[in-house]
Each structure stands twice: as C-alpha cells, then as structure tokens.
Length: 242
Image 1 (cartoon, rainbow, N blue to C red):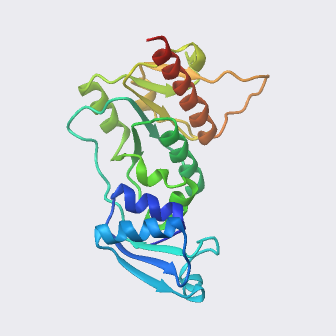
Image 2 (cartoon, one colour):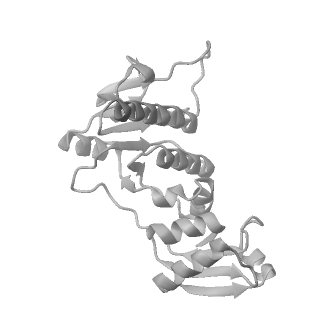
C-alpha cells in the first residue's frame, strides 16, 4: 500500500499503528522535514530508498506527493476493548466517500475526540486518500471496529456510557445540552440516518439549530464539526471556571 506526502509519512511513522516497509524519498531532495523522517526511519529500522522524481511519479497516484512515498502494510482493525473507554467517543455510520471520512477524522482528532468507532468495512483501497484528506489524523486517532449496532449498545450499557445521537425526534438543541465527561456520540449519514437499534437505545437525541428556515439535513461531516466544536467550547468553559 502506497501513501504519499510528508504529512501522511509523518503520521504513519509517529503513530506506529502499522508496519512500514519502505520510506522512499526523491533523490537529492533535502529539507528539515525529510531529515526528521530519515531519523524516524533509522530509529525504527525502516528501509530508506532514494529514487529519481520520474520513478516516484510512476508509482504515486498523484503529482502532489512532494517527493515522499511510504510503502506500508494495512492497519489492524481493533475491536472495542474489554476495559471502559473514557472521554468523547464518536460512532460514525453511513459515510461512503473516503474524502468525507478523512474530513470527519480530521475534525474529531482536532476537537479532542478520544476514539472513532466504525462498522467493519474494508477501506484499505482508500486509506491513502483518507489519510491525506485527514491531514494524518486518521492514523493518529484510536479507531475501534464493530460488527453491528447491537455490539456498540451492549458495550455502552455494560460500561454505563451514555449514548447521545444526532436525531431530530424528541431532540434537545445541541446548545442546550451539557455533554458529560464520558459519552458516545453517534452520527449517521444524511440520507439514511442511524439504525433503529441506536435510536431505541439513545439516552439523548440532539438537533442542530439552524440560522434560518431550512428543511434539509446537513452532511455528516458538517454535523460532526458543529457538534464536536460545541463540545470543545463547553469543555473550555468548564476548565476556565474551575
């Protein structure tokens, strides 16, 4: 599997989520970032190769690689752990586009989300795209994979973790809800929404207030961003008043 660019390479090597085969750097290309990547590679005993630009272009999927490629193996899919996860957890469902998933991972990581929960699916073909779209965040954020919604519901009940969902029926405004220290937010796709299992087991439904009359749902990435940074605002206010 080939990943492109300095940001992706840095995330892959720093996070140590997967085995890396080779770091490929354009011949005669030098910079502080490249020096750092070479030092990481030496520390982790990763093979470093110097290739001409033409050879890198032939292997890369785009021209925006910046003279840096990484050959790496697929990332292991970890199930939910036996122990209790804490903090802001987020389950995302119904996202089909790798750019959208990358954008969501970027938002979640930047906003302090402690874990992303996804349903089992082979994203390996799109991981380079996801990683680049997420600015490396998809490799840095802990990800747990579930077979179905029932698995998540059982885990949350076992560990007494509240389930909060983006769903309009009987909902409270995001801006009127006080997010607890530990909870799981579930957001579905704009077209299909969330499965009945999550809706039936929700502890609180949330809705985003709009600035004008508008009947249509926002896309998943926008909803995720709005709610995540409301959580940031609430945490910031809480810490400032302590």
